[in-house]
Every structure is written in structure tokens, then in C-alpha cells.
Length: 494
Image (tube, rainbow, N blue to C red; front, side, top):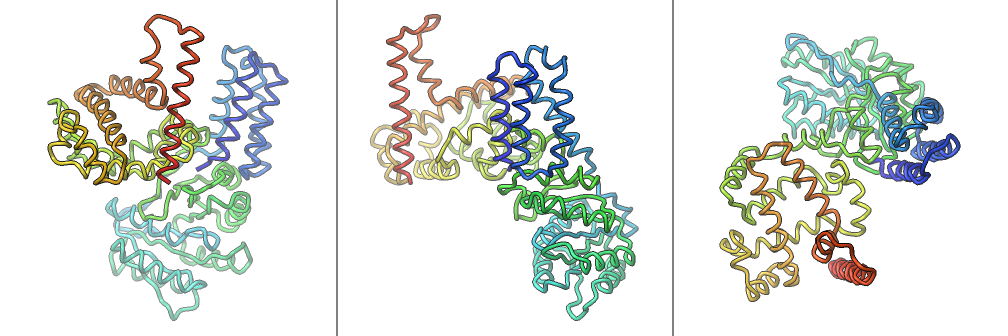
């Protein structure tokens, strides 16, 4: 998400930081790069113009130019303007009481993901204790009716449809009557779309709006369509007076233009973002968190919330108790990696951790998912005793046997055991610690793990002594040799 925009903004910030003491002239040069990055991300031109006017007015002010770290202040200004542009946020669906029926109307262009989003909302409502009814009112596309029924069966949610009816308004009115009979307290109308905005589409939606009186009208916008999404959002809002926007396909190569522009253009809040095709891939929108993602600062809050939902809390407590006793095995290691996999692709997870977004570029062609499968293969090829205490039990002959069983080289088994030793020490040290102590230790470990040569340098550099030119040259050669070896291994895996 937002990779191209992140790269552009990062380049602009580097330019500002490289100027030493900032003047008004080089500040404006850096801001021009920011403006270029926003336009290339397909942010609406009027939005970019307003955004840059607000940032420039503050960025070239006397307070910023005379500050100790003006480039960092510019980053802060851009962050705050992004938050202002995409906020304020209102994630509430404004539902009526359970003794009444709340009607939600979904609209948008064809292919924006309306039908799937109806299912995601239905799932969310059902988990919160409501009883939703989804209505197949998209009569333009017969497959939409079938798709909604399939989603309803998967979720255990009732779906109302009338394949013989040609008027979507009649279908919606009949669905409201059926909702009362079924005891449903929320009705979700899946309306028709078009490939583009036209009078027929708007007229149909306006008739549903007038006769069914939905309490909330939400526009579903494809986050990958950029400027087109902004134009269509403006047209829908003028015709229907929208109550909110749901951005979909934000897990792909979305350039970010729609997320930044749509709130400013429509004036209505972004409610949710779709982050995948699965029916649980719907997140509440938070302007501050999205601004953090755009600037490559991660989104640790969303990651923590997802971990609380996805992780097996009982298993986490059992592992905590074991670690307090100084027990941590390769089975525990594998279990923790499996828990992390529940959060989604590792590249995506890394992008949500502050300070780790740059790791994706540093990793190059490495595939974390494939590497994890290899680790699992190695662990699964070990005996129970070997997994409990690999350092003491795995000798050279066992290492060859494990390597043959998992399809890897013996040195990879050895590397896993070494990594496990470090991990086991850290995990047992973390057990029973407070959150502040854990974060401090994790930052220290992250610093070492993100620098592949940190431990090598630590071993080679004498304590309290500067390296001589000859020692520096030797260390550099050793580092280059180590990097070449790792690249060869990566090519061999492919």
C-alpha cells in the first residue's frame, strides 16, 4: 500500500535533510518534490494545490527555518496536513436500536467491490450481535445475485432476492417487509453499478433513496482507480448526499490518491478500508494511522488490534508461563511464527512496524514466506528431543540427516540452531518483564537483526578502541564476502 508515494516522499525528505541548514529556497525545492510525489500518486490536483499551500505557508515560516531540525519538522507538518485532509473520522454506522430496522445502502461503480463489501459489513454486524439481512438489488448483473447468496451461505446471513423482478425499488421495499418477518435489525442494500457515472444509474439510486429512506448511504470506492475514484465520488455525493465512503482493494498497489482526495472532495468521512478479498479483511479507517503508513512510519496500533483478534490467547499464556520457567523450545518457536502468519503476508506486517518499512527494499529478492516454510521444514525433520534442546543434541551426523529430510544444506540447519539460541535467550529474558522493559529490549534486538553485519562488527571491533585503516579494510572485505555468500544462497533457492 502506497509504496510509490512512500518512495517519492522519502526521496523528498532525504533532499531536505541533505541540505544542512535549510533556507527558504531549498525548502521550496524539497516541497516541490513532495508535490510531485502527490501528483504521481494520482491525488486530485485541486487537493494537492490546497495541501501544498497549507504546508508551504507553515514550512517556510521563521519558526521552522530557525529550528534545530527543520527537516524533521517538515515531516511533522506533512503528517499533520495528511491527517487533516483525510479526517476527521467517524467509524460509527449510526445503527438504531435492535427493536428497529436500520437500512444501509451501498452504491458505487461496477467492479468497485460493493457485493463483497456488503458481506464484510454483514459479518462485522453479525459478530457485534446484530442480525443483518443482505438484499440483492443489483439487477443489472445477474452474477451479483448469485455472489451475494454464496457470501450469505458462507457467513450464515439471510439474503433476500427476487430474480423475476425488474425494478430494484420493488425488491428493496419487499426486502424491508421481509426483514420484519425474519427479525432482522439491519438491512444492507447491494445496489447496481455501472462502468461509469450516468443518468440512468443516478436516477435508479435516487428512487431507492426516496422510497426506501436508507438511514446511511455509503459509497464503495476502488482505491486503485485514483483520480477516477475522486470524480465518481463527487458525482455520487451530489446525487445522493452520502454519509460515508468505504475504500476497497487497499492491499494492492494502490497509489494512495483516492484515500487522500476523497474525503476532501466529498466532505464525508471514510468509514472503512478493505485490505483483502477475505470476508474478514475490513478495517476501520483512522486518518492518523493512514498518514503514518503513507510516510512509511508504520501502523503499530492496527497491528496490535489484529494480533489481539487473531492470536490464540490461551496458547500465548501457556508459552508465557513456560518461558518464566526458562523453557523455550523449537516447537514454541514454530508456534510463535505460525501466530505471526495469521497477521497476513510478512512483507505487509513489516510495513506496519515503525522503522521496518525500509527493510523491504533492503531484503531485495528475499521471500520471507518461503524462508519460513524452509524453517518449518527443518524443524519438522527433527525428533522431539532435538526440538527440545537442539544445541546439545544436534551433532554433525544429525545435522546431515535433518538437512536431507528437509531438502536444505547442513549449514542452514546450523544457522537455525544459532538463531534459536539467540531467540531463546531473549524470550526467557522477556518473560515476566513490564511493557517498557520489553520494548527497550526489542528495540535493541531489532537494531541488531536489521543490520546483518552488526554481530560480525561487534566481534571484530575491540572494545574502546578505534579500528586502524587496515582493520577497517579487512572488516569490509569480510562483510562483502558474507553478503556474496547470502546472495548465492538466494539464487540457489530460486
